[in-house]
Length: 231
Image (cartoon, rainbow, N blue to C red; front, side):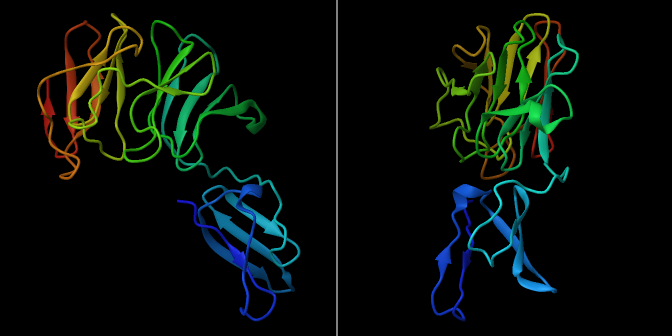
């Protein structure tokens, strides 16, 4: 992450970095307009940006292209049009309809899965990917920036995959989160407890990859990256 662009006006003898704070980081492509070499298009994880002066300045907004990649979404079942989603390198977002102006962020960096608390729709669970930022459960309350909720989580033994799933038992409100073990919270993420069984390892890409609660307060289905399914 954080791969920037630099420009030169003297046949590469000297280079100057483009101010990455003016537009999205993690760049992958650049193309000059055949009709005018001072016009440059820059492609990044944030979209396509444009410079009209050879890279000295870059427009602060991307072209309006619907290209944001979501890893997963969580839907507020109590509202007609409120959705949360973790995106690839564009944070965890919340929005009320398709208009971009009505979407905002609750967690930066890469997003992953999101979950709306079934007993309190003002609480949203999210996380960064394994090894990045806040990879353990984070909680956003009333649309605030998400803060880590790691009471009961043991990073020394709870190894992570890149994406670590959330689930909920709608009947009890119990929140589940999977890594190398299955963790659960009965107090809206205030603290977490774990099942003793270890499900694979991050090194072997066999940690928990999916969770489904049956909604009866006691039965949970767990799938792993190694292809095993447990009840």
